[in-house]
Image 1: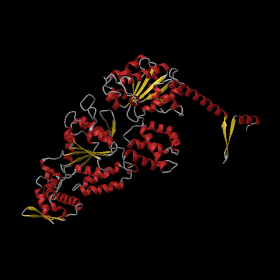
Image 2 (image 1 turned 180 degrees about the vertical axis):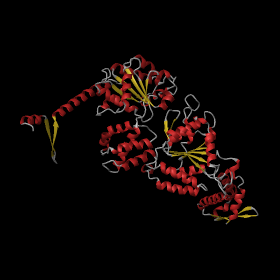
Image 3 (image 1 turned 30 degrees about the vertical axis):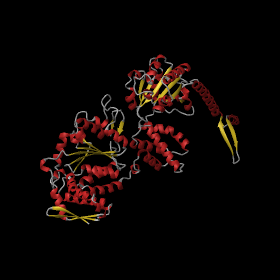
Image 4 (image 1 turned 45 degrees about the horizontal axis):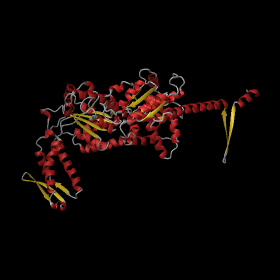
Length: 636
């Protein structure tokens, strides 16, 4: 129990502040030592702010286009470089170099290049454990495109750059941060040898006076496209490769930023949603990297909650944010694919004739892949469709893609076009120095533009081994690196390979027997490695039989009738017409494609020609029959 003396001492250590207004009276009690701490922090901030502002004000040319990052960071309570201690230490040591105090930060979009520099600005102001020569250095950011846009006449750009370097050297303790530094090469010219190129002007200036330190930032794509060619410019920088943060590190970053988001959006965010946001952004957002994509998803989720007049963030807000950011259907995030896959199975059974077993097996694998308890595969599904040509392998993939994902969510690559050495470059883009190196790859560019979808590698047995090795990376890791060093994710892509490897002269055409499983396995193992085959679900397609072909013809008539319905016309045909078309089907080994060609030549073409005549608009009925082994069309 406290004595009266102790009580008085304790009471004297507190300070009470009365706040009166029209509605109520409030008393806020502060501990005096906390007030002293707040007072000292405020004085320190004012002192630092005064130094940073004064130094920035002396940069008469630079302040017209630059942003003082050091002043911006004064309002932050902590650094934005959590989990980047190794990279920050590299920056500090590089800035301390006598020979090369300049740094070039390379990293993909969203890895936090600019935030790392902002965090460094905070550390230079607040962290008194760093070397004295770096304390209270200010960082000023400029963007080359903004800087060069105001240049009107030849020589003005060079004059501006020289003034900036001179001012920074004169004022001292100024670090110049050039975001998107590749813009220096582009400022005034796209030719690195052009005398008005900004990088050419800057090169001699950044080696003659170490009182000016430069940090540049750019992506790997822009680096290889613009900067890498100018080796004399690049060697003046120490290079920092900035990789995306890990899932654990991203979780920590979001936890540290939670209060800032709550304060800005005026919303409560339960910490349980942080792991969900990191997980969803990792799985579904491929256009950016950690930590940026997780922060954007958190921000977008808060916006969704605000526009729904909520005070607490809810899971549905995250789903709605994901729909906006990924263009994926909301079912992806609910994992509510059961009903959709069941309806998809019915559609395929109706449209793909004679392949019921293959369809059921295909949908079964997808139900596992899209479930919560399914294994976390590299892709949404790796399939190898085997069987004769024209049995519906490619058609199944196309119909599935259009109905399940939507139109334009399907890419078919004919592997016969990738049978030569070096042809794999068409998929990921040509390497630097080769023709077409400025362009992307046919495969990787499509995946960048399509978060989900179906890719079919047709007749994969014809592909060169280099292409097979590339496919193995996709099947195993679910990602590829393109020619511009971008990592492309295939997490939400369904991969389908097709092969006609089993087709021989003894089992083509009409047959009532399935392919021999053991013989098929032997043929596949002769062409592909076990490592490759073990990552695929192999689905064998039956050879079509006589009844299948009849059903396909009936379906073709049904499709034709749907088109004629729009013209208010009806079509009728006899059983003899079916028999006639089957007799005309002289190359059954070519499968459905050949049968469709027979239907087009004998049915579609005559009706199309008749549609050009003047009375076509008045006709309502088309009767087709067989007379003297010839098709007869009666229009009424």
